[in-house]
Image 1 (tube, rainbow, N blue to C red):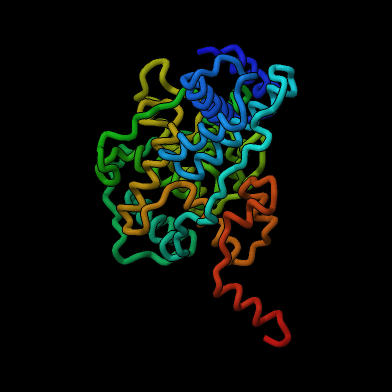
Image 2: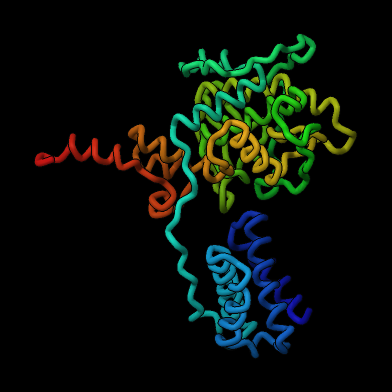
Amino acid sequence: MPFDDQLEAYEAFLRANRGLSGNTRKAYLSDVAECLHVLALRGAADLNEITLDDLRGWMAHESRTHARSSMARKTVSVRSFFSWAHEHGVTLTDPAAMLLTPRIPDTLPTVLTEAQAEHLMDDVEAETGEGARIASASGRPVRPDAKTPERDPDDTIAVPVGSLMANNADRRDGHPSQTDDTLSDSPDGGDGDPLPIRLRDAAILETLYATGIRVAELVGLDVGDIDFSNRTMKVLGKGNKQRVVPFGGPAAQALTRWIEEGRPEILREARLGTADPRALFLGARGGRLNQRIAREVVHRESRRAGVPDIGPHALRHSAATHLLDGGADLREVQELLGHSSLKTTQRYTHVSIEQLKARYTQAFPRA
């Protein structure tokens, strides 16, 4: 490809100067490479030959098969590349300076109601045989249809939590590349899975809902990031920014049981060289859990529980919504979610009209 040298130089720039995660750098480079590949097929052999009309033609070509949200990301990536090229003397001009980003409809993902979220958490806990105990300890009402399958005493492996607190100093971009794509022994998941996998999935759901963290942040967690004494976890977010996020009792119990019972069993059965002793969440082969598998877990469990089919982002959005409905300050939710600007938090959180009306009635003198 005629532009390989420029792409390599741009990648080095992103790695050294932008503080971007490995996933973000990969997305930027992929978008730019696709754009340059299309332009090369149309005859461009030098970056200085590319014009604004060429880039608009590329956008028209891509928009036939990509959503507006994808096109907006691709446009930002290409604009960033040509801005770098111009600033560093690679090109004489910046043809992408006037390239407009497509407007994205202001739509929000599916949000679970609080009752649906409780139902989902109770259902996944019931699959581990711990639904009633966790519900009782957390003050949740116990659903009459919750399943509590019998457990074999040999399923419990007593391993001190402290002995598993591995050092996470060598983490690279917060999301190590060695991941485990294996989901489970059962294609349908749930009761057909071995107990360690069910314990892991329950901990995944509870953690995502309790903290509102991103799925990339979830799989990047190490055991040493969890502080059970304070019920907080250290999360490495976008731009390698670290924040501390609290979690509640049900998530603490689900995590404790996964760490003490499920995780050691998976590590014990892992093949030599495949296990990741630092990673909090593991695949069935013992490597760090893959984002795709974490997404599949959320989709599968939401379908099993009979609630709207959601992914991790919708669960994050639901957590933020329920916090706001419960009276949390918008800036507190911003800190929890790891948003750099309040505007982003306002876009991805939804305050119920009933809550808004109640506050209006309480606060406005002529309500």
